[in-house]
Length: 442
Image 1 (cartoon, rainbow, N blue to C red):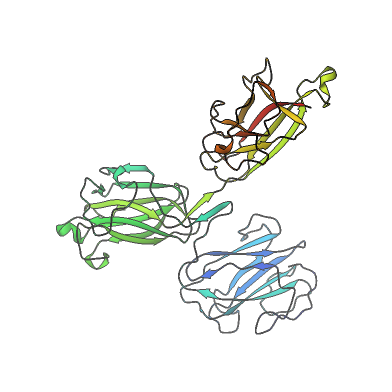
Image 2: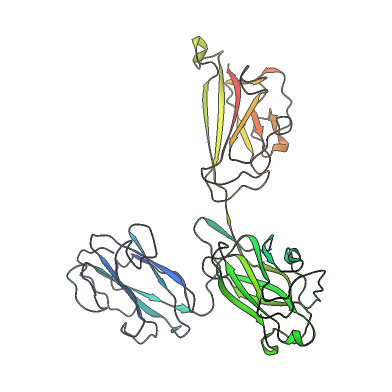
């Protein structure tokens, strides 16, 4: 949206009379769940007004239907820190219409514009929207990738007063089985606190399962558990409860594991905090997520060639002189590479012959391949992590590199294969490693 004059129509049954309505990105809208609408804006002094006809009565004048009021780019109410994009956070109530309805956005230098009044400049954009019941589909913050796989707690970050807290780690036992103290953590005092760490971010709006049980007898009719979640381990929000009265338990069975199913809030869940409502015994078998957000590795590589000797006639890349190949790789992604997955296979030009010896004489290398790294977290053993191939075509795997080179210069080496071990880490600054070897120009 710009704050120049827009003379196009905006009232139409399909909210499509103005072909220029393209500045607003509206995500899935779900009752009781927060979403953020992105509005692209340009022009000095502009202010954003936004409306959604929540009850579907054909106007934008009912209480709560104005969702943005005089918001400037990066001003108060802007939920997006990027310049040129205003984020408008909205949470449809449980009473909004689920029939198709409409949203309107106005961008102008005029302040306090209503949904229908004239303005001397700016733009009006209308959109047809549908609000759904239930949570949105699971999703991840920017930079992370959604994986539909399950996982369990990997660590106890707080176990104050909890008996056998570590027994709440790992896979869940089957629902309905008995949770004796030897198989579950036990919370039996109002001061007890158990915080479990997934070790990864469970996707926002995914399902979180808590496997828990109450004791037998009268305690089994009053025991209760408060469940809170956090993405960072610092700020926890209430997510649900378990028990406190017979009618509130999933079943009437005591001393048997039951599942409490929760929806992960916006931002996702890494930590789950469990505390008793009273001093009655609660067994905690563990927690589980149904979808997870993981960083992915993005490795970029570059290859350079330089003279092996920097002075005299050997400094030139001419026949008979040696050169050093340097292959550098950097993980610019948000996650580590899978363990053992880093494989470099470099195919040599026919015009050079590989040098199988100490590549730099008195330098730091002690063999034909020199490996260095900064923050990559890899290990390198030249005896097992370097191999060669004499094949005409590039090998597909490290195992296919089976040629044993002769000492000195060997023109039969057509491919140099390097497979450092471990998981290449991610981080800031970006981790990197380099491989160097020597060859002679024929």
